[in-house]
Image (cartoon, rainbow, N blue to C red; front, top):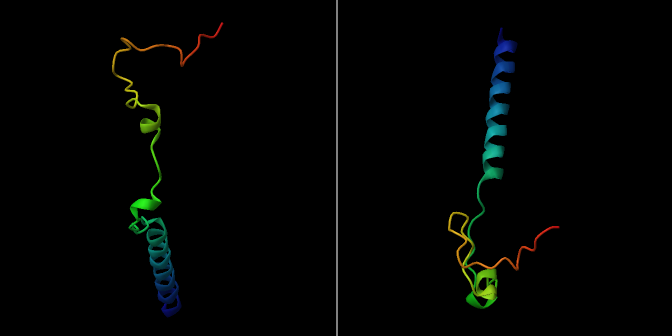
Length: 71
Protein backbone atom coordinates (compact mmCIF):
# COMPACT_ATOMS: atom_id res chain seq x y z
CA UNK A 1 0.00 0.00 0.00
CA UNK A 2 2.85 2.37 0.77
CA UNK A 3 4.43 1.73 -2.61
CA UNK A 4 1.10 2.48 -4.32
CA UNK A 5 0.86 5.81 -2.50
CA UNK A 6 4.44 6.65 -3.42
CA UNK A 7 3.80 5.87 -7.08
CA UNK A 8 0.61 7.93 -7.13
CA UNK A 9 2.34 10.80 -5.33
CA UNK A 10 5.25 10.65 -7.77
CA UNK A 11 2.89 10.70 -10.74
CA UNK A 12 1.00 13.68 -9.33
CA UNK A 13 4.23 15.57 -8.60
CA UNK A 14 5.49 14.77 -12.09
CA UNK A 15 2.28 16.06 -13.65
CA UNK A 16 2.49 19.27 -11.64
CA UNK A 17 6.10 19.79 -12.70
CA UNK A 18 5.13 19.15 -16.32
CA UNK A 19 2.25 21.61 -16.05
CA UNK A 20 4.55 24.24 -14.53
CA UNK A 21 7.04 23.70 -17.35
CA UNK A 22 4.36 24.07 -20.01
CA UNK A 23 2.99 27.23 -18.42
CA UNK A 24 6.44 28.79 -18.08
CA UNK A 25 7.37 27.99 -21.69
CA UNK A 26 4.09 29.27 -23.09
CA UNK A 27 4.17 32.58 -21.21
CA UNK A 28 4.68 35.76 -23.18
CA UNK A 29 8.22 37.08 -23.20
CA UNK A 30 8.90 40.21 -21.23
CA UNK A 31 8.63 43.41 -23.21
CA UNK A 32 11.95 45.07 -23.84
CA UNK A 33 12.16 48.84 -24.06
CA UNK A 34 13.62 49.79 -27.43
CA UNK A 35 15.26 53.02 -28.32
CA UNK A 36 13.43 55.12 -30.90
CA UNK A 37 16.41 55.16 -33.26
CA UNK A 38 16.37 51.36 -33.55
CA UNK A 39 12.72 51.17 -34.55
CA UNK A 40 11.24 48.99 -37.26
CA UNK A 41 11.11 51.81 -39.75
CA UNK A 42 8.09 52.82 -41.73
CA UNK A 43 5.12 50.55 -42.02
CA UNK A 44 3.72 49.54 -45.39
CA UNK A 45 0.89 52.01 -44.85
CA UNK A 46 3.33 54.90 -44.65
CA UNK A 47 5.19 53.61 -47.68
CA UNK A 48 2.07 53.14 -49.77
CA UNK A 49 0.50 56.41 -48.71
CA UNK A 50 -2.95 55.00 -48.11
CA UNK A 51 -4.89 53.36 -45.32
CA UNK A 52 -5.22 49.65 -44.75
CA UNK A 53 -7.92 48.18 -47.00
CA UNK A 54 -11.18 47.45 -45.23
CA UNK A 55 -12.99 44.31 -46.35
CA UNK A 56 -16.40 45.73 -45.46
CA UNK A 57 -16.06 49.12 -47.13
CA UNK A 58 -17.56 49.60 -50.59
CA UNK A 59 -15.28 49.55 -53.61
CA UNK A 60 -16.47 52.94 -54.86
CA UNK A 61 -13.64 54.97 -56.33
CA UNK A 62 -11.11 52.17 -56.03
CA UNK A 63 -9.11 51.28 -59.07
CA UNK A 64 -8.55 47.68 -60.04
CA UNK A 65 -5.06 48.14 -61.45
CA UNK A 66 -3.69 46.26 -58.45
CA UNK A 67 -5.81 43.21 -59.26
CA UNK A 68 -5.55 42.53 -62.99
CA UNK A 69 -8.28 40.44 -64.57
CA UNK A 70 -7.46 36.82 -65.25
CA UNK A 71 -8.41 35.82 -68.78
